[in-house]
Length: 317
Image: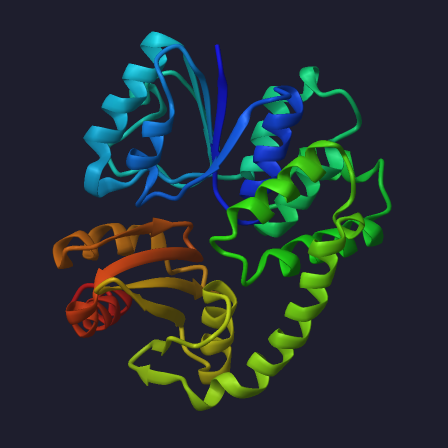
């Protein structure tokens, strides 16, 4: 039985994948995302042990994804580990295989909880890195794990990880090297290329902070920037902050669509729920967390998307 790990390429995804790899040495590691999950699962075969980490279930092809889960679970073993809100109407019991899901925890924490008995060393700090990377380090388990480490050193190492993978979105060989490095319980700062990339991106981020305000457009409660040469998630944060808007968006044109990240600091806004309701009607898809989410919309319908988002933010008439 071959083991294949499918995980997200962000900090939490890399750490969750590293924990799965540490517990299953020799496993193949693939990077995927909600829009590509169904196609990427073509790399798995009947009889495999398949681990999926930190991937939100896509509403636009949910039935097909669940059918594929069922095929893999029946022929082998499938474990789905995630913390994104499930599509409306879907429960954990509806997911074939073994589903480990909790919106209050990072995927790294959930993976650590599942695999901890099979880990060869004190890899709790890898779970902490992933939790901090996804702003979910305030859980009871993370507090307990942090007691075994110097918090300042842990936050430094997480910063190296997060900054180091910025701008390396589709550099999968590099990210696999990071996953293997973390699975060996080596700190991010000991990965020379990751550390060098982190320093370079820290300088780029400072430049982005200084210049993004000139590129931001504001419509209603939404501030957005398109094709700004920086991390979409961080650019969305700084777009919102520079304009004092309720929601920030950073998008990039790609193959006739606009891929985007959205961020908000307002507790009364649920971006995941809003995107899952308005994006499919525009021929796109979207979802994520209440305060941090993503969407893909046909480029020609972006204006309608902004209008729909503002209408949703305004609430019922």
